[in-house]
Image (cartoon, rainbow, N blue to C red; front, side, top):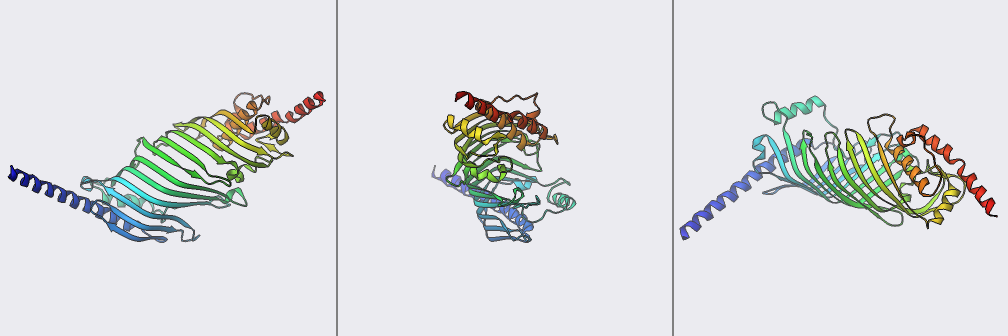
Length: 376
């Protein structure tokens, strides 16, 4: 019996050593590929090859032209699967990214800048490299079972909206994505995301859960935000809201489904402690005085239901305009404002629809003035 214990012990040791050696060479492969993509602006303080994973620490990317630091990662770890390289596919069991920070920037001219790393090579060069890396002329395939980001942050500076530029700050980001394939194939990748949105008075929270097909961008997601400071998005609505919003918070729950570029998103929106300064101007095409008066009657708290639908491939469809117009109609109905919408033109987010809504709301203030006169 003692002899069998010794034999099983030796077999176990050989198996463990074989596993460690196989993982070691798989990590060596990843290390070589990583070194190929490091270019101008990218620096890595330290790369460590562990028995079962590759660790890179102190990753930074600075745009060579603007000198903006677009990416910084405290540490990333890649855990390759055993023997996957021998099958012509690099399988990564888990890709873990610790405390990354990303900066996205859009100029006044609309030019977009992000942490994409060095400039992409020409398509022909990429295909040639893929053939060299793969077998039988086939491009080398990458399979990632899980991506985890913890303690992340994102800063988005948008100069296109004017001065001062909009700044959206996301903090304490935690993301998990399951099943990623390259080259892209049609597959449902499960996604979970949560974090905070910085506000002027307090931070709000958001939660996303569902799946996405990264190849055709089909998705089925549940989206929830809690106590988001309305003033955070002032640069985006100040051109449409001539009334001054003093304070308020927004919460929303939505189910977002996209299939073959058709979006269907029923949602519930809640405006809490919303305070609009009385005076001239409008709030979502509703006269500010009227809106402020109706708002007080509801304790400065409103809950509306709406649905955004449309074809995202239609050049006349604007997701932002569709959102604003459907919210405007639902808000007006909730406040008891008699809004008559002819057909579904207004829900398409076209300029004509917005004009029709404004025309429909022009007489509202006069209506309330007559009511006040009759009460005297």
